[in-house]
Length: 64
Image (tube, rainbow, N blue to C red; front, side, top):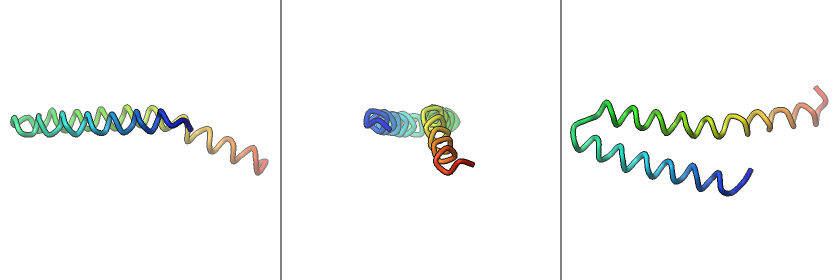
């Protein structure tokens, strides 16, 4: 895992929280929820291939 991925995830988290708070203050709770959901989906697209590689490595290590 690369350290830059951790910084990307942190940046997305900070950006999503700021945008979400601004949208909530302006009375657009639905848009704030969709922004949070989009941030979550983006981070999952980055994380899922790494988890897949982890399980493949474990499978090869234990020869299952």
